Length: 113
Image (tube, rainbow, N blue to C red; front, side, top):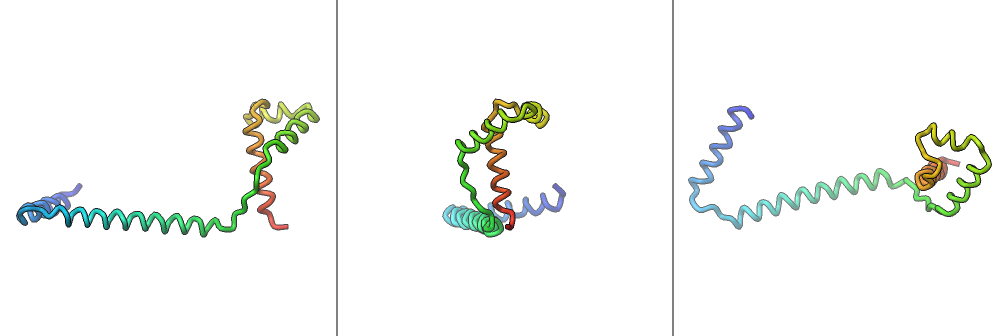
């Protein structure tokens, strides 16, 4: 901190102490008002984020169907385990692969037709 800022803080503290007994109810009211202001600002930020993403679509995930498709693809392609290893995924980690397939489906659904 710079000296001017510290001096201003000391002066504020002196003014506070010179006023005699602090009115705690006023301080609590000010703190409550400040907290409410922060909460309203957060709410506005969240609403803006939701408005910005309002065009996003939700695609339900049928994990059983994706699991079956994945297992079928893995059985059909002898190179599939090598491909998965190359991308850093273990062939037995089906949940991560299903999540990837679901994301691809979501991206495909978002594309204009």
